[in-house]
Length: 304
Ligand SMILES: [Zn+2]
Image 1 (cartoon, protein in one colour):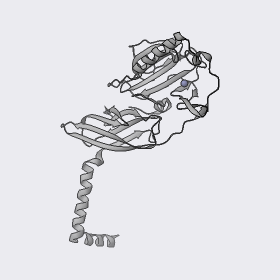
Image 2 (image 1 turned 120 degrees about the horizontal axis):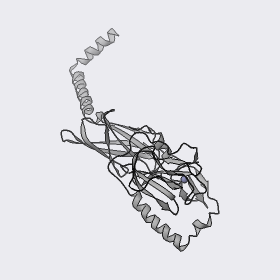
Image 3 (image 1 turned 90 degrees about the vertical axis):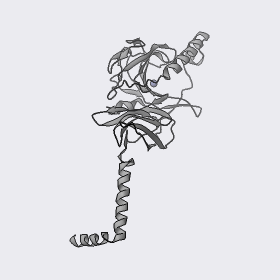
Image 4 (image 1 turned 180 degrees about the vertical axis):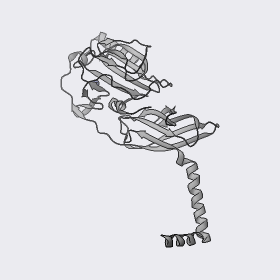
């Protein structure tokens, strides 16, 4: 060891080696002062198409505000004083092709300087189950009456309007809680295939509950829809802010009305089998900025 050290010191003091070492040290220092001090961590660590994701970011300098762009969506970050990091919920639609996508970050330091960072995040391929659609569907839904057709058209308009909602303010806080303590009877992303082509995709999570079971809000937010619809039945939509909505379908009874503020765990209605449901169950859907995400993953995330 001693011998090696001596040799190393002799080499170091050769002028050319010395200069090279100084240059290397400078290079290492300057990269540490800029890019190296941004950190971006995603949860889940393995991100797939259809999954929600929590981004946690630390910045090289204290910043006043942090925003991002991810898969064409604008993201507003919140500051978590306990971890001295910024966080935001986002997602990747089920249609997202596997690949590395840029999370572009923009911030303004407390001194008023604009800084930015680009981090590539991998989206892996998730294969969702496929089921063959039965040949017969209840007649009511294949041939709706003119009256029903009017209702369906009106519902479609209301639905499009409601699902566009993006409230900048974050209302959710902490991890999301299951809406009911029950077995899962249908997972997210299942493709219903008829005659070899995908007819529809199951864009929610089904809980096996008998009619009349209390259903709770999965997080805090505001009720932006609570009314009956032809396909969805009695349904409630809660806006949790930052483009995140949760949808509760087929209810037998409402416990909230449009405009109500709700807190996590608060009852919003009773389960049922209203609308296009083969039987009583709760269909829970998660929508983020126009994209359906896997509720099962959202319920598992550990959130600040
Ligand atoms: Zn469902």
